[in-house]
Amino acid sequence: MKKHNFSAGPCILPQDVFQKASEAILNFNNLDLSLIEISHRSKDFIAVMEQAQQLALEHLGLEGKGYKILFLQGGASMQFINVPFNLMKNKAGYLNTGTWASKAIKEAKFVGEVVELASSKDSNFNYIPKGYDVPTDLDYIHFTTNNTIFGTQVKEFPEANCPLVCDMSSDIFSRQMDFSKFDIIYAGAQKNMGPAGATLVAVKESVLGKTDRAIPSMLDYRVHAEKDSMFNTPPVFAVYVSMLTLQWLKDLGGVAAIEKKNQAKAELLYNEIDRNPLFKGFAVKEDRSSMNATFNLVDQAHKDSFDALAKEAGLNGINGHRSVGGYRASLYNALPIESVQALVDAMQELERKA
Ligand SMILES: *Cc1c(COP(=O)(O)O)cnc(C)c1O
Image 1 (spheres, rainbow, N blue to C red):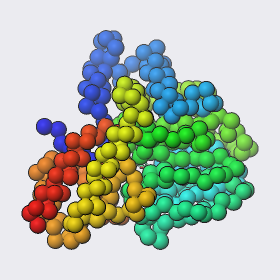
Image 2: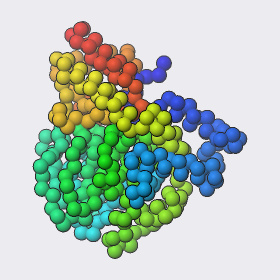
Image 3: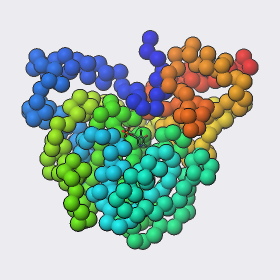
Image 4: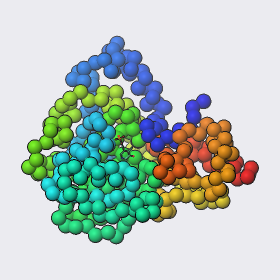
């Protein structure tokens, strides 16, 4: 039987998507050829790319609003440098909410000045800073919506008079938002959309081309937009599987429908973390992530028993990141609520035994 997969990334995808993807590896569209041996410029693959872009636009509610959807390589980490190359004239503001935000800041400093708007480093990033001042002379502001490692999520964004950029790697397509507030949204595929190897960038074309900087082609969003993500060979398999996952999401009712399921999963787990005297949550309650729940045992003496119970129940990928310790359950779109129930059952079993 398949394990309950709480892996933080790469992560669970719908079983139906795995099935279709494996069929396409052997024989794609009855061409008697594999998806991964045909030209990316064939009409069959161009249709995949166009559909993936269209589905992403639809799910984000960005159709007809001047955005281009790009599928690039190099991961979200590559966008840490692409964003400042494309947008920074002098300085940009960054909210420092964790490891990924800190890495984005480090890369932006290669290009210009970074103003750290606020940071929650003082308490190991277990909360989202609020009520900070936003200078009015910034070229853009950068957020990380969901802090995959620490289990916090940004729920409100400040008013600003400059473009907003967001790393949504670990919560894109998981909850409804007014995505048109953001001028650039990027996400590595492997957290909620597909396999590793593709990175989605939604970019409002009107913000590009304002820096007077010569940008190397592979870093230039305008080049990728003009060539419809075919400036070089795109990661065909990752784009195909992302397309299947976005289609799966549409078939089950889109972001509004998955948000309800995600809320139910998060509530089930957080209620148990708060109720069970053997466990405690890591992130402060109001900033808790609906995608990555971080928690720990109150008493480490129970660790071996709980780990054994988790193993017996077929729970995979619940160990916390080394910078937080304890446990992290990732509740991405494709994770069924039955898996969360299996985790809750193991937590209750520990309580009975202890
Ligand atoms: C995983 C992750 C990244 C890194 O993504 P790569 O595709 O491995 O570069 C960046 N930001 C966030 C929020 C992540 O969760």
